[in-house]
Length: 282
Image (cartoon, rainbow, N blue to C red; front, side, top):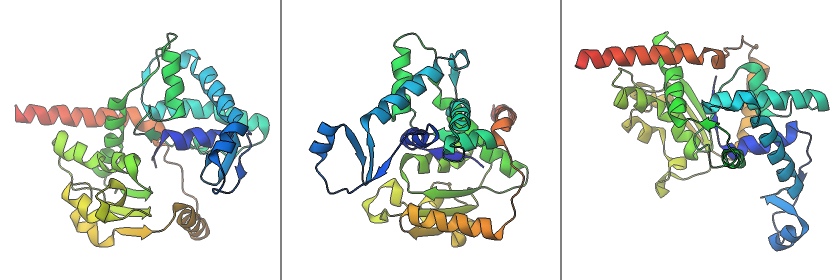
């Protein structure tokens, strides 16, 4: 199990674990008045500007720790950051409210395809101005995610993708197969299972609405599995709770795979096979 999210989702997720207050409101209000009142709006979710400032301060305080003084993948960064959020949850008795903290406890790697495109990345950049050596390395992200898929397939397993929405995280999950096949030149056929929940249309040409059939042409989806691929056109906040409720009601909990703890071994395997492949070509 592994996740690719936007940095914005992970940043705003932390508000809950840090015990901050968000409110339900109407999207049909004056945003000029909200700005004057120091209120931020995300459609119908409202929170005070201080929520941003306090979350920023938390992130900067955390990444000032020595353990963040080097380059790392976004999975390692989020795992370490999630540990601090989990500790704050425990202190505030808010456990179970933050995704990034839950992933830390379960050893689930969490990647982001655009580290700089969020308030988390903005704070990392700000700290770099005063000497921080923290760098979120996209090369590690590309290779680690490919190694996860490659390892699952080489061990006789399968790879399935569940996509909520689309955009950059969608491609980052799916591009693992072209990375293995097209770039590294290793034999593979594509992901085995594809389930997407989206409200985006295919005819606009955008990635969010791209169909699994289109993904087959890129090598992202195994063509033999295309008939079982599913696209559900609805809001993710409707569909995901239904899927989660069904899974919890009909399946026993299974042992955690803790892929975070196995990242280095999986990456070494991918590296070794790629180097061996280069040797056969030379």
